[in-house]
Image 1 (cartoon, one colour):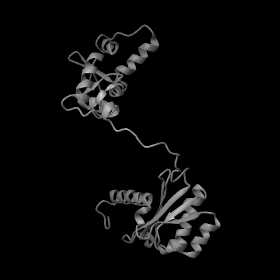
Image 2 (cartoon, one colour; image 1 turned 135 degrees about the vertical axis):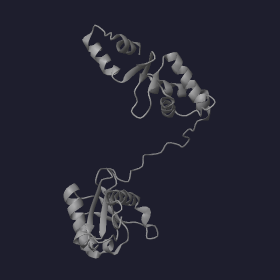
Image 3 (cartoon, one colour; image 1 turned 120 degrees about the vertical axis):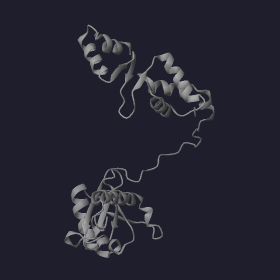
Image 4 (tube, one colour; image 1 turned 90 degrees about the horizontal axis):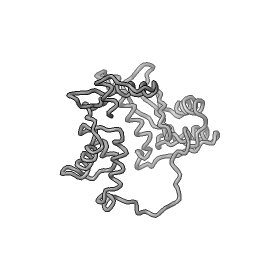
Length: 249
């Protein structure tokens, strides 16, 4: 850090133009206050730059001092930054210190479970597994729309939504065709709740004809379509932000 301090105070640069350019770029993030070098943070106050000996003391005090909690290397590095200190090898030094800490190695949580074969994830590739749910009724909008059908991809968390005036099986079929199949291809499976529009025979035949597996959530626990429920919360939150104090918000 001495070369940056010398550049800021004395405007001294290395003879090598590449090294000089590198120092000028680095120095833009630093300031000298009362002869001490500080680094500017994005969401923190000025961070005091310290040498290796001071860094060892700071790590030791924060990790195992009177307020220390023997946290992990990543958490320890974050605590050092919040305390207002910085040096170039901060994260690496914190990780190495935790590895050498006797108490951490003796008492930290260890994985004792025996090795098992890998389990398949719920959605092995993008747009293979979708969850669909219906929101509403809402106050009448343009086109007499008062429902919202929401679909979410389990892998990418991509959301497709469309307002509907009525939530018939025919409208749901059109939504699946237009918003999912023609845009992302034929999915492996779609998860629904047990609404009448989803259990309709014609709709089931439409899915079976395309080779799409039709899965239902538990009757007693429709929230088991968790990804769709999470997407509903996102959509409702955004609607509230957009509408503010408007009618029905």
